[in-house]
Length: 275
Image (cartoon, rainbow, N blue to C red; front, top):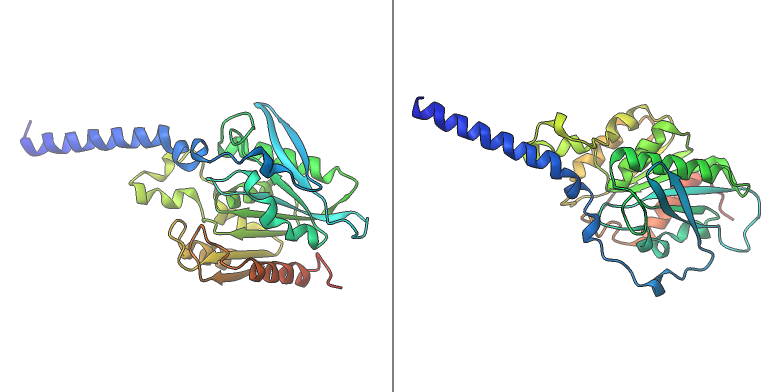
């Protein structure tokens, strides 16, 4: 064999081996669940919190339900289903997201399979199964208005709620620091896109989603570039985009501004009313 052909053959062999390794280990990259720190049990004492267990074919997955703040009208309330980032668990979010309950909106934090105390292993299929079960349990509650379900995802959670939006109806979609698709990162790793096991094609979901969409994204996001948020916004039929002077993990940079923006959006589309 000619030395050049031998060299090319070795390069091809190394590339195929590299692609094989990425194919089998990509879920450890996308779902780094074993690197997520576990909070102290004392941090989980949250007023009004209801811990739920969702049944899936691979076992039970944890979810946390927070009702609207006490003293608000007892009529069936709107609700937010929240999907968190890939390096987080639901334990991290009640304090930051309790603003929904003060707006009269119930909050359902859904864990991913294999994260926290939940059974199973994370994948797009297992996450979709979990979020569909969470949705079905939520809308069956008498204290929840099934016509006012809001889907909210941050980073990887945007993929979770977009996948849910394909399968269940919702009144609005909020995406923060979310990507267009996992396949869009394949070139970055020199991986053919067809080898991506969990594509989470959010762009195609947003293109067909009929309801209002709010896109929140940091201009200096070093993990999911700002262009992803811009492309999601351009694709939405009924979209609004708010850019923050932030990166990925510090978005939003000011929670007071975040709540002003989110409550204004929900008010403008008729899901909540201000006194």
